[in-house]
Length: 237
View 1: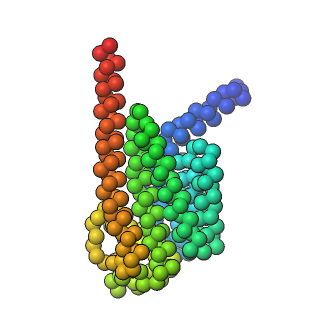
View 2: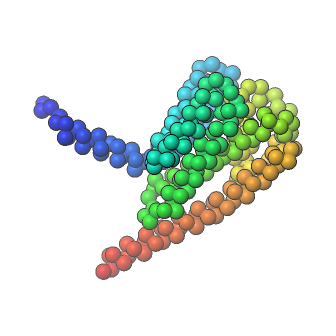
View 3: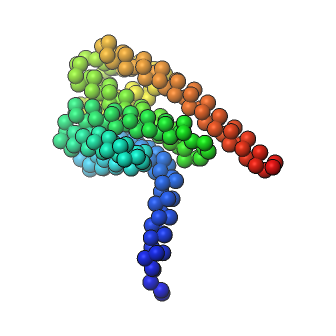
């Protein structure tokens, strides 16, 4: 067996790097879904909480690596990500829930800018739009938790939910649920914002969710039609 030359090894490394970059949103989506899937089952379980914190740390790192490509983006993302990781490791809830919306909100803005800059839409770009939607929901959940910590009694819940948020991880799950119910404007009514700040966050998120779907779908459809028109022109000429 002939040894692999440095040139071949370098080519393979570059090829792997390009492959990962072309599927970055798919990988990020898998991490987000993994984090959301395990969250309901870890309450009160030491091993489960360790696994969840590990996946959460992976999510923060994945957001920084997958979304931020420019130097200033990496610096900002690393700053917010480091603060979030430090807050999670030290159980500083206020720091964690203040840093996460900054990180995820900035990540969403970069994803949205990237989509609007595209001239050719790929499947991974569509997954990027899905990632942006999920990141917004998680970011708002952190804002709700931060509000509940800084302004007590900002939310009224039914008795079952009140009994279930005895620890920070359970609280994250409950407010993730509330955030996505609000983002999709389902509104079951089992959690009600009672303070002006909480109510403002809720209606802004509901409006944002509707505008996001309308504007983004229009952008993706427009890009797809323009791409189809260019293909037809090239094949006809």
